Image 1 (cartoon, one colour):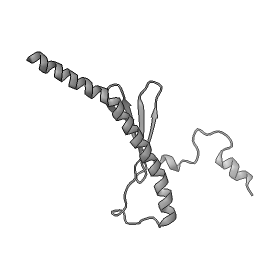
Image 2: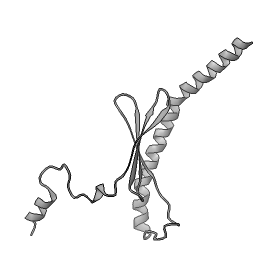
Image 3: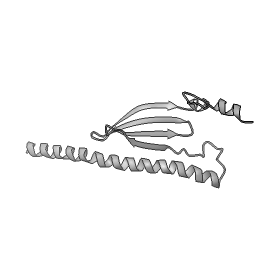
Length: 130
């Protein structure tokens, strides 16, 4: 009786592990869909109505960008546009593990006019214009 229970538990664990890749595929497609909506909806809204000024009434649209790394790991970048914050996750499809790799506010990064750039630099272009 114990062997039957043990075999059933192992079978259940195997089914759960085998289901992770398909679940990750669903998450990846969902992430791509959210990413597309995150790009399309703000553009459409900006053409239809003026932006809301009431912070409590506004909604945050997370932008999600996914990619597969050469080792098979799924990389998910989540962008929160209101606070200008990025979060980077790695998902191991074989085990279903999700790791938070990095979080960063990029508000100050976006104020830098040039960093590690190649010529022509913005100041060079401005110097040429009349």
